Image (tube, rainbow, N blue to C red; front, side):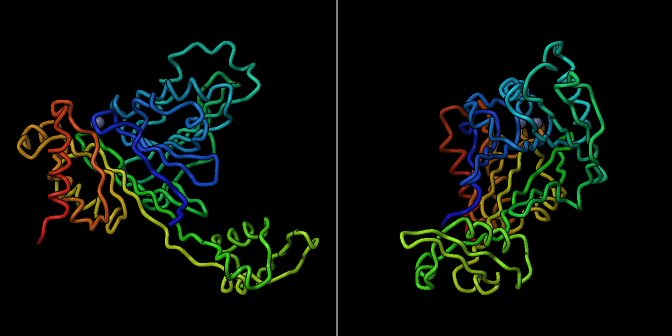
Length: 337
Ligand SMILES: [Zn+2]
Ligand SMILES: [Zn+2]
């Protein structure tokens, strides 16, 4: 089935955590976590519109410089999200360089840092290359409940989990998508054209049923032009495809409070990307390190009713033993009641 978003881990499971989410049919992408991103070529980094950071341990944030180096002078805007203290951390990262020439670059880069604070409110600041990345106020950021970012085709929600420090667990949710049934379109005697995009957009953004769509196309017999209502066209040629939901959960302790936060965020999720750092046999060590074991991750996936689970953030101590970690996650997730 064609869906809007294509999420893929940035690295192998022993590498730094990260999830790259490509948009089909658009030169655009999202990124969750900003650790080692050397595996992402510049053209992929240039597509990023929004980056969602879970917390700023180095393995989740050290790639900031790599990203900055690629987008500086080439891209006009990027929005970064993070938890408590994030705006100041972005400010300090930028303050670590000398910027005496960037104000002359043709393409102005604006970095917008958005911070979710513990009470659920938000802070925001902008940093422009034109003004040597000094901190400036920008349009206020305030999450609506747990919704950090909302567009007509998808939204991103987040809740805090405890990793000794507050850490954001994310839900990425496609909204319902629509698909054109080409056979029914042909049966109606209508041709394809830009109007289909307009129709899909109208349906996805909740346009009223009687909204007029100019149906225009050109073929061998010439120009064709008609006006139809959204509801009529929707019923005749569109199928509504339910959106998929993805979870990105990494760096957390195994506590009831954390599991409750994840249940509120991710119950019934389609694909759960979840850290699985240690084996159950090393559960005491996992607790000391504020991380999950593979078994705990699998049991959480099971409790959430996740339809698929993808483990990552394996500890280097298990190098060459990834099959054991995978087996533990999948065994716990699919165990009979
Ligand atoms: Zn980590
Ligand atoms: Zn961490």
